[in-house]
Structure formats: structure tokens, C-alpha cells
Image (spheres, rainbow, N blue to C red):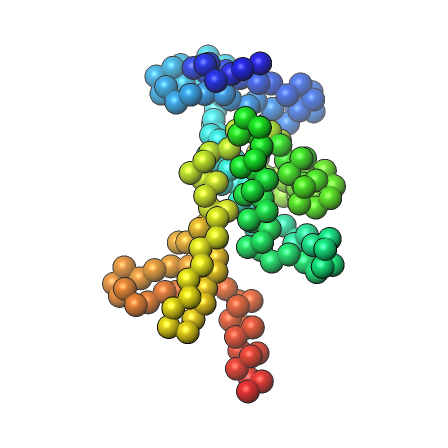
Length: 190
């Protein structure tokens, strides 16, 4: 069904409803606030989640999961590589739809890794949703190589783990114990 012309709609996952899963509704909307508010009240939605919320949650899920193994090298991908793989996979999906099982298969080689993580950690996210393009940009990599220092990180790390000082344009704060430990180890070897 083509839902692009709908002002509002709701998809009900019957399996989740029968299992008393509170996350059994998927809302389809085109951004008309007055219609949306009426629709939420009419179907009884307490706390509607947006596609932007789901896309942001997906970024956190991908960031928290164990890193998958690159079948070509046999080594684990880096976090930035996984985020980039996820970004490319999501962007190429038909109709801007993210299917967690399909994404899990593409990244991990099985359909259950992401959904098992979601269920084990109580993350409320639809198993299928339309991604938010702006929020999806969190998956993109930023690379900079200046003054003999090379940094590569995802946009989603900005203001979380990478902070630019508002007071001093020369100060960047990086919060990462693993990175700090790796730097200390390299320094102690010399």
C-alpha cells in the first residue's frame, strides 16, 4: 500500500499486540501537527515515537552492539566501518524503510542479532520504520587530518564523545577510555 499521500495512519503489529508488547503501533505521518495531535488522541497513543526517534535509537543500537566480523579479512570491523555499512544499507533500502531483521542479516549474517539486542535491553523501537534522513546522517563519518593529528568519527559522536569548545576554538575534547588507553600504551612503548 502506498502511504505517501496519507496525512496520518497507524499500522498495528498483531503478534506484538497479542504478546502484550507496548510497542505494537507504528505511526505513519506526513508532519501535519494539528491532524497528528487529533489522530494520537483518537487512537489512544500516550507517547508517540517519531521516525527521527527510531533512527536515533538505531544509531545507539549499532554503536552498542558487538562489532561484526569482516568476512573478507576475518577481523572485526571498526565501529566507524559498521556505522558506514549500516548507513549505506539503510540509504539503499526501498521506500526509505528500515527493517531491523534485514539490516541485522546484512551486518551480522543473521536476522536476530539486532532484534535480540533490542529485546534484551528493553529498547522500544519498531522492527520496521521509515528512516529520518537528517538523523541518519549521524552514521556518516567525519575525517580530519591537520597539524599531524588524524581524527575519524561518526557525526553521531559530536556533542556526545567529541566536543568542540565554545570558549576556545583550538580545544576539542574527546571522551573515550579505549582511545585514551591505546594512546597511553603507545606512549609507554617509546
